[in-house]
Image 1 (cartoon, rainbow, N blue to C red):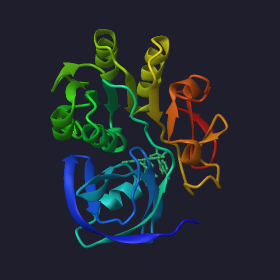
Image 2 (image 1 turned 180 degrees about the vertical axis):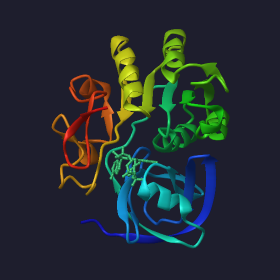
Image 3 (image 1 turned 90 degrees about the vertical axis):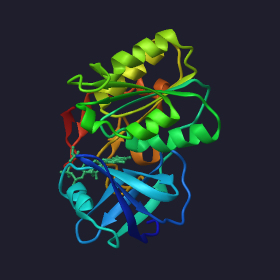
Length: 257
Ligand SMILES: Cc1cc2nc3c(=O)[nH]c(=O)nc-3n(C[C@H](O)[C@H](O)[C@H](O)COP(=O)(O)OP(=O)(O)OC[C@H]3O[C@@H](n4cnc5c(N)ncnc54)[C@H](O)[C@@H]3O)c2cc1C
């Protein structure tokens, strides 16, 4: 097992009504797209993407007991961290198109910071249910050429991030694509890129317990998301029968997404 580091929460940022960033000082370095296992004392250990802006931070969407508890934490509270784990996004030819929806920005924002540091041009298509749920709006609009889609039309285009993405792909000479968000969205992005021979990488979320390739909970078509991913290339994804269709629940059984 990898070592557990205990860190103290130094700052909290409410990003949307259901998403919060928790900032702390962690001694380890990591690559964009990698994840950590966050230990919540006396409760659970859950995977989260990790990013850095002066301090290290995780960005948590409130879902069940573990994420609700993280949302209730205050400055000075302690959490444990194991990692970093998994592979990372590789920043390839620009313009890079980033397609994200829901909480996918939590995984992609560090890649956007890295693209800015290396002088790459990024176009982003960011989707959310409503304007209030747009994640990292300030960061995406400052660091990328940002296009917005909301389900209810309260900001940007009324519709899906994938509808914006296909227009951008057809109008701009996109060099490569990164995507993270709902799997149905990522499947569409991968399909449109594969049809046009544009390199695409997508970060998958699967139920995960150990994070280090032992328990096999996060398996998808024989690959373990924790060590073979979480970032997979378009060529691998188009071969996966479960991608966008089936996921394993806590008890290991496959269910439709
Ligand atoms: C590599 C990776 C990176 C992730 N990064 C982030 C992130 O940056 N921000 C974020 O908000 N969420 C992220 N997640 C998802 C996050 O781990 C789950 O939302 C969280 O574990 C839910 O726990 P819960 O007790 O609050 O909810 P539960 O009520 O237990 O479950 C709610 C939903 O979360 C899923 N889930 C539950 N436990 C896990 C688990 N151990 N591993 C994966 N999924 C789980 C369940 O399938 C269910 O659909 C990531 C998942 C993976 C695999």
